[in-house]
Length: 294
Image 1 (cartoon, helix red, strand yellow):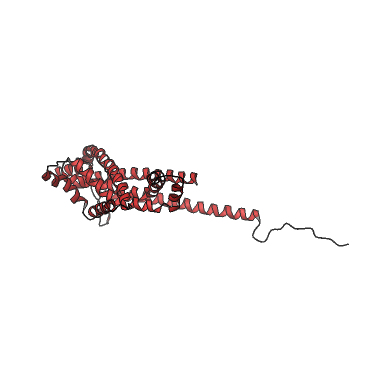
Image 2 (cartoon, helix red, strand yellow):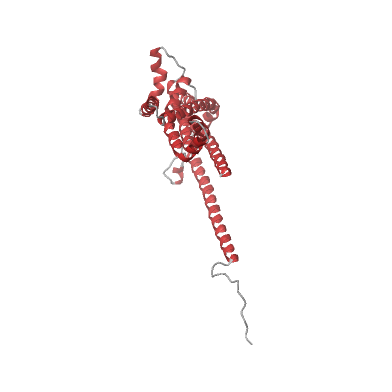
């Protein structure tokens, strides 16, 4: 009597579905464990860093404990008294930034289109604008609008001079960012839109620019954060009572420049964090939109 072996469904070694599932779960748990440990390490590092900063500005004299170090003693009464006055400059700083950002975006798009134009005058004008503005300091440009133009009979307020200088300056730098974004859009999409009967203007407005602006959000966001801090240069005119101007005024008047500048630095930092959070949300929203479309 012979026994016949029936067909077996055994999988090749190492390909058992249950075993593969367990391995996948193990790898997932390990990855999540590493991520949790990293996040905990980051939080602990932040706590230690802030504790060290608190110790640095605590005013404690460690020399009595045998440590040759004396921490910084701040005038907290001055900080409590003048922080509200310095804070009033935050709103002007934000207004200055928003107006300059709006102007720079308009100039960047126009400059990028000019740099990509097949019209010699448009290309030459855009190239000259980018070269001239990038080749001169921002502070010089602020002084030009505020101090030089009055010789020509054009008198601008400190705020207007600051907005024009910042907007024109960052518009030149952002021109190259927008131009690179436009060039990154595939030629095939333009050809497809042209085949559908769109004009060159419609292709640029409806196909190219929307995609280019999505690609340029991260670098433009970094530029705008840099512009936010460069608004402090407008204080050199002496007629724009923004954040740094107010800090310098009360700091010099009370011989407490350290405390006054620290207050301004904290306010700048907070504004930057808010702008960065807004940029992250915008990038995440755009990324979700691209995944939905894909």
